[in-house]
Image (cartoon, rainbow, N blue to C red; front, side, top):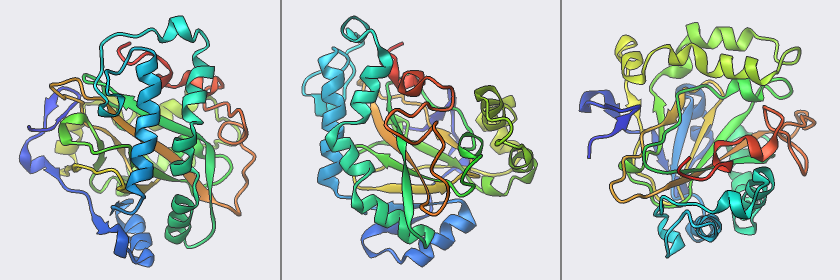
Length: 304
């Protein structure tokens, strides 16, 4: 099935694979260089597959409990229904609880991932407490953006660990990266020059991250810049690491059987950098808009 982005079919010549290494045999100095050169790197099979699948089952079971996922829950097929708002009127509390699940946190904040990111950064790494679980049903996708504006203001060296929670086919709408986007200085320089310590309002952050990039659709963007969209099929255990100046989003989920794509973003920074940003650290992080987990799209029922 040919991939789609924002309802546009991507022609074969404008679609390519991600740069990758075999995670089990990764030389992290090389991975570090790839992230510097390309803005990202895919590490195949580097995470404990059993642990990742346990996290997947944990999240989907919570969504099955509110009638959004069919049985068996680990298959991740949407029902098209929901009782979430009836059972959990406090959307923040519900999604915060799901995001703090034992199996989820074993993957996102366990020693394995922290050591991997430490090896890539070439110095001790610390994860943000706030994570971004993304269950994405058919018909949904994430617009193109740069991460830097969201997390600037304390540490300037934020890296994202993107984790597929399960085996994800192209039609399920996985992560997509714009090739060479870490070199788009006309887009990067303005967001780098903004003083996020003085103005880190959600409006300023959203404008910097999304506006210039989304003045046109992604297919027009890559045609104008003579580049490609990069993605692949993923398996549980894979990991993509990218920096704050890599343009990314997701392909459209066009699954014909209602398959929900589940992934997770975990942000890391050098442990030596300040970790006092209340948006992303602490037992009740506020998030960029101040509403914590309740502000995330995933806090809403799947089909809304």
